Image (cartoon, rainbow, N blue to C red; front, side, top):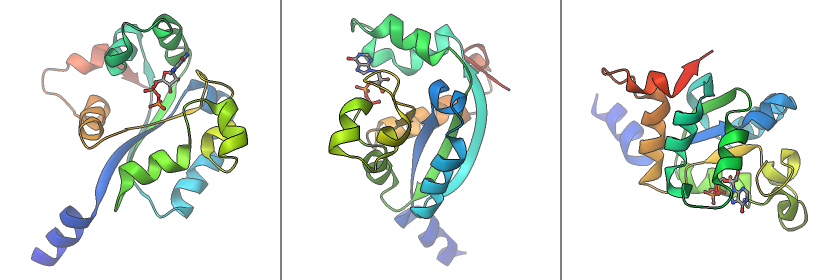
Length: 160
Ligand code: IDP
């Protein structure tokens, strides 16, 4: 119905959230999901998956020339990740605000209530990811949930 359309597509926004390998490994999933739901997000889709080298390199392609790239790929392929499509009004910016600054060590002093302060360790191992713009959110969502007919993404990450 038109009422359904106006509710779903005009006000709501989707973003990609990820609990990175360190977050899953240290059992922060339930605490993070509680923050997500208490903050008014709807978890539209979710899946546990494991990135391989090609997948992590593709996901973080914008950082391929950085000095920390190989370390980042090693970290991101070190274990499974939980990816979620979060939905709510202003989801992209609100999720970025909730996770806090990239450097989890700094977050502990400047944003003590942020998720990265709660469960991250440092500038690299910061436990969660969030899309940073209206451009990256749909790209990152389809990277994991695109269900491509060609199946190319199956070579980059495997559902567990
Ligand atoms: P973001 O995740 O807060 O958007 P980005 O700058 O896009 O931050 O970096 C992507 C990821 O790369 C970070 O979340 C972190 O895991 C890692 N990273 C960023 N900067 C550094 C660094 O200087 N050294 C090591 N790892 C970094």
